[in-house]
Image (cartoon, helix red, strand yellow):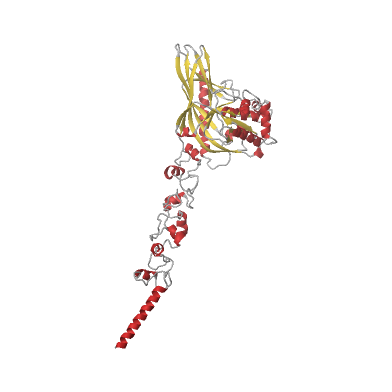
Length: 526
């Protein structure tokens, strides 16, 4: 009998593992799909008419460990919550156990509990019992159409279970009922009512960590509480106006921890699931401000405030003989790296950078997301990182300009202006080598940045504009019929002045007059 039972357990988790692989397969083969990704998995939740789009996923190995001191001759049974399969948000399977698992129990909320038999000894012993799970967490975008929200069947067992009061969920208290009705007002649409309740808790209840667990009522009266209290209060407010809701216990990972690849957690996290007609149970975290759209950082272990099998925690012990002593517990988490689109960024990095885990080039600029983040430091969400009018690929691969600055050569012209408008060299501040930068020529001197001598008078633009103060756009700056170049050559002669029309001409006329007079006088003597 015991062998048959173990065989059933093995088969059960082989099937769970197959489900994970199947879901991952459909995820990777539905990159651009806008239809629900898990229709078969979601059929039990009546969400076929809604849209659950997977944006990303991360694989974890999660090891839950409990350290115990067991007195001599005591028989101890450790019960540990099994992370549930909850498509499209989470799929999980048992991977390994340090001690034999004698069975799987199910409580009134549908939570599965693994029963671990610890070895009995004639002497007192310290030991660590561990169970390792494979968990895949999906980042889901839930597109809810409020007009498609249906009506609750109030006779269903599920509706009755999750609208009644329980410990810490005082949904029948007049204060809770009054506040819920005040927040909802005249709103008749369930979706809008739920969102109002969620936003009220998120904005009005201050986060305050407490070792003592408070219920929803005390949280409402004090206006503060930890994640548990946020979850209790939102659950109670929803139930007070007839909306089924339930608390979820598990762990909320910190992104910086997950990026290290391996970390340990000793404090859990709590959030809420809310039942919407025609859509099923929706993920909501009033502490972190997440509504319907999930992240890849929440791993759920069980639902309900208290379980008949687990009490209020994620594990408990049953014993025969002297009472064992719990020395501590921890959750060891390891990230299994996966790069679903092969762009050089792991899915977790894509979640951090908000890139598309199923598209190698999120911004369609011709560069892979991994190249942009790790090689070029460009923005993988923006095709033109520096807003200069050229996309990052064109800058890097075609023109070899800097995609992080609008003006690679610092000449006061953007790279795009140089390439598309003025045809200047975006890598060279002075394209024509005349001593004036391209921007200066275009914006100030108005000269041709591609020609060192814009007016073709034999003097370059820098010499004319900066030194001689002549007109670099005119062959004859002063209009005296003497080209600027000639005047510049003979500038040592006082009569030649680039900016004086009369001086050279009158001087020459005078010189001619003197020559004529001298010539006439000479002939007269002869």
